[in-house]
Amino acid sequence: MKLVYLTLLVLATSLQAGDFRAAASQVEITPKNGTPLAGYYHARAVAGMLDPLYAKTIIMEQDGVHAALVVLDVAYTTQALVDAARAAVQKQCGIEGDHVMISATHTHTGPTLPRLNLMDKLTQADSPPGVAYMQSLPDLIAKSVNEAKAKLAPVTPAFAIGDGKGISFNRRVLKEGTTQALWQPKTFDPATMRPAGPVDPEIGVLVFNSNAAASKPVASLLNFAMHPTSVGAGTKVSADFPGVFTKLINERHGPDMVSVFANGCCGNINPNDYFTGTRRNHLQIGALLADATDAAWPNLKPLKTFAPRIASTRVMLNRRSYSEAEIAKAKDIATRMVTKNLGTVTMAEAVCILETISKQNEPLSVEVQAIAFSDDAAIVALPGEIFVELGLALKKQSPFKHTMIAELANGSIGYIPDSRAYPQGNYEVVSARCAQGSGELLVKAVLKLLKELTKK
Ligand SMILES: [Zn+2]
Picture (cartoon, rainbow, N blue to C red):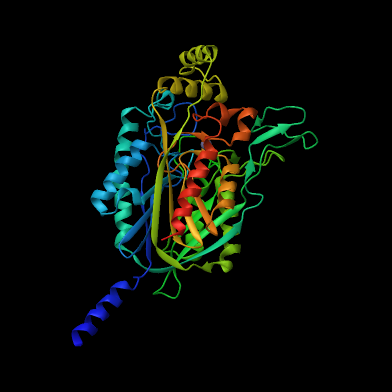
């Protein structure tokens, strides 16, 4: 009798779910002077720092299942970096590589990483300091994951949506009577011009409150879609507005917490107001986002959690196709652009065409990933600079109440416009590696993953 009772007790205990735990950590990844910078179509080397760059990690865990969200203060991620970092995390932290999501904030004053295309020559990403920097990252990422893992403690996540209306702007504009989009226009005539698309004004605010210390926040994940281009020129390293935003949230809500910014679908979204000609710097933008987040803080609603569920899949996309004349023109531009600035759009198109031609027989295979930990919350990874229209569609159709999207995650194939934008041309479209319809394919693949994650 006693034995039966004991057996039942053991069974009951093992069936009971463990605590939902989370923690966060940040490890500095500021590059040394001389490391090539990303962001633009010419070489710039780091000379000093405005503010430090970090590899930041939030880990969630329950019943031995871990999910790690890593965000880097760099311009983009590459497949080579993600593969190496996941291998390092698996080896050094004991967390399966495919349970790790690695994205970039897209700061334009961060280091560049080799991409094995013409951009490496233009930015000197494949120079010895550039290669050395990239090779240093996997261990630093693993360190950040390990530090977060060591701090795991029971938490209750809570979610709110901040109102970021008026902070971000669609940088593509349509003029009356034309079919081609203007890009970042210097002047705007409201009588004849209108934004070519929407913005996503939502600031996703996910806060992990400690169960032990009177709801003290230990980590936050902040999600907003906007290009970090507000420091821009110069050669001093900066995390741009995401650095300011996360620092202010820590200062105001918990000096011991780590706040992580994941960039949303900002492929066509900038911080500059083209309609009034207003430009704000990274300090102003960071403060605006922090104020909007503060306003939403009282609305944080605790989430009912389950052990992290992680799913990912690879999607095959079609490459673009080009005429002989387009290819010949791109080759001509490529010979001249290394020594002369021929204009961003012209150079971007040539880089894209030549990469496409050289990789014609290689599949354009990308990863999409989704992590869920509550019926009300999921986080999605998309592999490029995604047009906001695609992000809005994904959020709307998601089976989860709140869906956060991290772009430039688990590698990047550059811009991914929505189908409607392709005939309208200009910068993001001419530099997109993937054929029209690719963005919609990715949204469909993610929705399928999310649907799977609703079932245990
Ligand atoms: Zn960009």
